[in-house]
Length: 462
Image 1 (cartoon, one colour):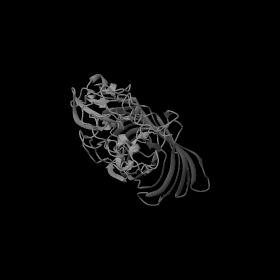
Image 2: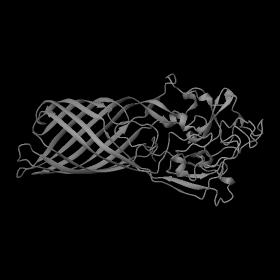
Image 3: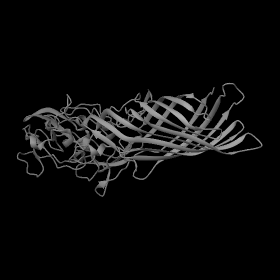
Image 4: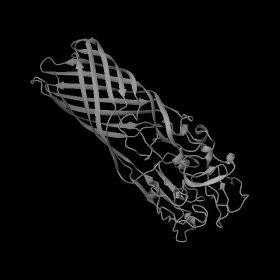
């Protein structure tokens, strides 16, 4: 179960409780589905006389590809000598995300009734299916296009420099059979950052986090042959860093409307006046956040066997990160006044006769809301006037948004790996080349994704 931001962006429920899944059910406001497609621009599908079934499904099975090069420079004494050393790593890479979004349903879009997206006319549904709706690029009547939180069916690729990493240390213990080095490690945030336009955005690096910490590296040759050039060694390399604040964009659900509520329709008001603007809440709940992590670290422990020019290594690598701390500054220029926005559910600014209604349903959920009401005052409990400021969202983002719901949980992964390497020892610059691979997997109640990798290494020593 992957629970981190972006790894499982759907909000399916099971027996009324959150159920982290890559599939959701689709339907109307009365079908008990995870998503009422009315909120996504497909209209009141239950009113379509050709409707073959009441529900459908949407599935998201993303695959992430990453290819790149790590340029590593090491300067310092040999590992069997005490002294200073320095390492500089510069990664360059291409990240590709293939969302593999699919749906299975016979839900047919239906026109929005008079008064919902236009004051006096019926409005054709802007999207014929849910895949087009999540890739929203259309404005219709009062309804504005979705600027953030999109899932495009197309494969997205981006090439970037990754985060530059620098380590400076000293070998405090060194002889022919063992060494131990201690160093300071720094990370510069030269990779890209999330812009929240696409939920599954290719990122290369730590999403804008600078880091500082320490590194511990050492080895021990515990066996050596007396007859040929063979020996066995244990290697350890570990680091831990504090990740400083990164300011980037992130999309939030509404505090009082449950999972997935960032896709609910909201109407904009100024005082008591409807501003002829309806949009998915994600357009206004996508804001700049400050993100920090107390610690991130990894370590690798390997068994290395050398025979003449060949070396074979098998080992284990662990990676972990603490819970994220999020902050929002509501005083920055341009901060949104959320009290201008009312959650509509299926209510509308106007009636089918063109009369002004200005009704809203403050506690509507993405898969459950009340049918449209055509009279004022509303006969149904929970449907109220949007012209009353107390029926709209709280003014402050910390009150209006579910901040904790988008905080990245603590994570830990395990990665068994193997490597084979050949070294030309008789050459002046001692060139080497190797091939390695591993499988990184998450643990129960974690917030990471499973990955496998294969890589080629090469270099020279002088």
